[in-house]
Image (cartoon, helix red, strand yellow):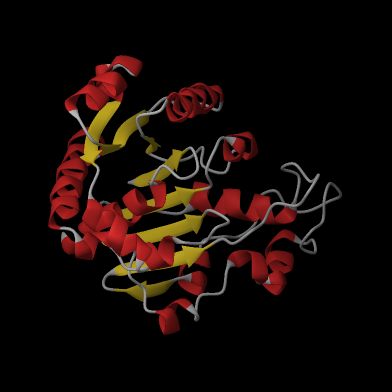
Length: 258
């Protein structure tokens, strides 16, 4: 199973991506987490110690690897480069493991004015599309906030997209755009997770925005999660309530997609 976690910036998608990865690891799955958000905060959300995080070299900084696989120097826009680069060994070359979760970081690969026609984006798209996933393997990708990644088609070959929303009209509007644009590239399975829910009224509001079959579940506002994030620690390890709710969400994912 391959999941792409999406949503408006700041709604908690990185926290959700980390929680899902850690739950799968607890269940004994082989887990690969991919940080495709330029903020590169997934390592902290997973509880990677600073010295281990320092060992992670983002794909965007592997200039030799990008040129080797695409035939073009990093930053090349337009021009000629391989559209189907070799990617089957990238996970092993890029990933660093901690507590059962392997993490690969893509880094900042977009350039001003480059659109999607760059060698780095081609390599990332091929990596995500052709990443082989066996029956007990799970991949969770923390996408960049917003909708631009859909224009670059970096996550079109996933089992499902999970759009994180919070109780705000802006967040719901972005999720609806994600659903529409995902359909445009052939991805019709987009699931919704409501986050930071403070009341039954807020949950009801989100339920009114989306069809019932798209709703995966809801995560309540949790002060313990906020404090662990403030300290740069893993919410999954610092909040029993968060762990409980993530377990329920993962159970739903396995029922629907497993």
